[in-house]
Length: 186
Image 1 (tube, helix red, strand yellow):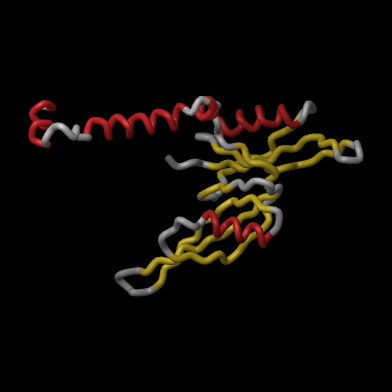
Image 2: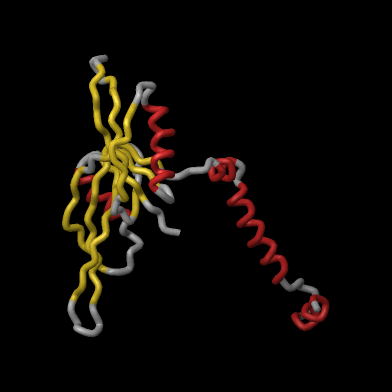
């Protein structure tokens, strides 16, 4: 299922390190199924950031194919990746551009993180540009259900028990010949 990312610009009073409050307009990214849901979600997220009034100034669909957060990084970078494919009819190279949002501390680290994100790509690609994004934070859709399943290892346990059951069903006891096993099974 493809994710639609929305860039939301929000204007609000922000308290700086000096203690003074200034009006600030910040950009946030979140995934949603519609503009209405994006507005609702950014409203909920902003309530955690500020107790002051805020205004949603703009919501637009972002053109990110993927978002890659990395630990110990505090800034977001927009990486332009050109996928290179050979056109079989004309024999020429064809480039298709996609954009990744990658978390890093500087441009060099953003390049390294983009390369890590593209590790599993089978085809050739180039990274023609990396620019710092105005996005302050990313809010992926999270139901909380995933965390509960991981906490109790339900996902991992159910997968391993299915594999064990299949292995037990296909094992032939050493005392039986394969033919006798098939007769018993039938």
